[in-house]
Amino acid sequence: MDTDAIGDLVDKLKAMQNDNVEDQDEYDDVDDDDEEEHEPITLGFVDKPKNKWSLQRQYFPSKAGGVPAWLDPLNIPSGGSFVCDICGEPLQFLLQVYAPTEQETAFHRMLYVFMCPSMKCLLRDQHEQWKHHPEKPSRSVKVFRCQLQRVNPFYSQECPQYNESHKPAGCGAVLCDWCGTWKGDKLCSSCRQTRYCSEKHQVMSWRAGHKIACPQIQISSPVSGSNKSGATLLESHKGGSKNLWPEFEITIEDESEYNRDMSEENKLSNSLISRNRTDDTMNSIFDSFQGDADKKSWASFQECIDKAPEQVLRYYRNTNAKPIWPLSSGRPSNADIPRCSYCSGPMCCEFQILPQLLYYFGVDNEVDSLDWASIVVYACEASCNASLPYKHEFAWVQINSPSTGL
Image (cartoon, rainbow, N blue to C red):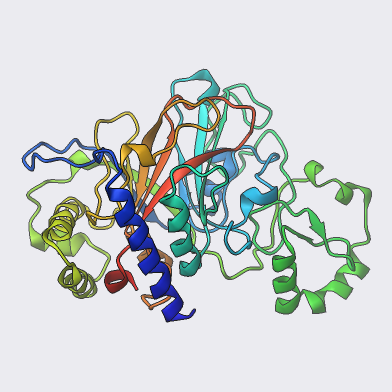
């Protein structure tokens, strides 16, 4: 990507942010009392699953990377919902969080986060984020909420048996053979067997080997009646794409379990992330801050993170806790958070995704690599039961300044 183009985008973004500061309401997450007790929340960590089958949809997993485990496996988002509004390419699965409520209509409830892996698109996404609720926002980060009653067509009313033999009650849509994420609505015109979510993925698959495999598929798998209706087949994908982020299970722990006075020696021994690499990166970021406000924000952020350095997610719903922001600039005001587009009710902070996740995904620390300071997901406070199977929610992305992240 053109570095100059990135710089131009960031300059425009900073100008937009400065213009908005004058009109913003008081930040809903700013706390002037430095001594106020921090309310413990639920923390999320990534780990390689002991059993691959445990990440299938019938076990209602919280997971990061790989492919999503769709709660409603039939009515997957389609049309313009699954593409980046900026470059038009299919979005990549970031993570999903299983978060049921006490409501009967949300006995099962899952939130999904997708994003475009292009940093250029993420920077352009910021222009839309700082507009006050445009009618048709162009986003490269999208959040979907899906919820089901206890009695539903896809799952038993009983708790799942955690063994490989447990199967879901219903079938799902046929998925793209390249990404395994979105509906495979496009059929290869030659073999009439391989399905794709988009022309982009069809071209990538053809170049990666389908050009050679296609004639063999035509011979070995003649078109059958059952293949004409994707909704009648169990979802499957060949995992042909190597562009997916590595797959992890998200495990949760209570923040209160972490001792505030944990010694530096214990923190180092418990961390999988290289302290030398972390120190070099953090010192570079800290030195580049322009003012005391950013340094104070970063110090507070780092103090919270140091209690559990490997955390990648912070869950806030049903608590009085607020997101921790690495930077003082680029935080939302109350006015920046839209109301629910379905019931017009208020949104609440659901969870926060930390940049540590990029380390586990193996994202390179290069000038044009994907990077963020924080992603905070806001969802309908009432978790309304709108007619759409997958409802759009809202993500606020805070990115580093050009000198820190670019």
